[in-house]
Amino acid sequence: MPHRNLIATAVAGLLAAGPAAAAPDKPGPKERCYGIAKAGQNECGTATHACHAMAKTDNDPAEWKMVAKGTCVKLGGKMEEPKAAPAKKREDKPAGG
Image (tube, rainbow, N blue to C red; front, side, top):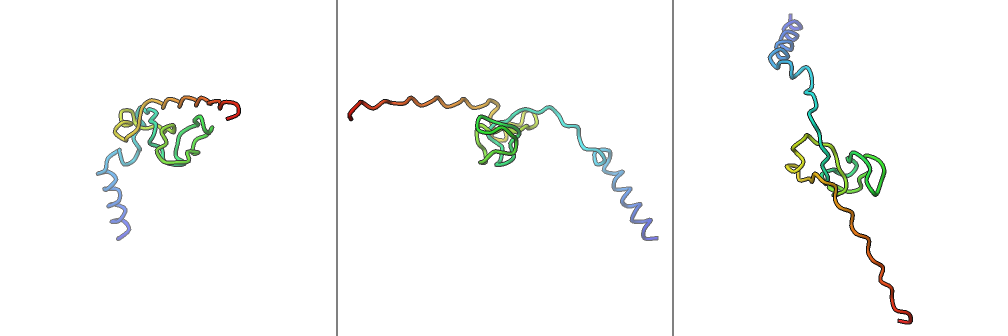
């Protein structure tokens, strides 16, 4: 019967693929990676917003996402949060000028 052949072929294919096809791999250790998140795909808040998925631009250096440990630099990211830009000093103009 054609149905039995189809089922037998499908079962044989699953058995040949082994247990990896049946269950996803366990996630390994992760780390924060700054500067690789695409717009709307960041993990968490920053100094400019409080939630995930709120990144406005791709690859913003302040935005981060979790990646497999040891892959951040390979992806073009940085392991450390960028330093905040120093506040600009207000230059007072001389009176009358």
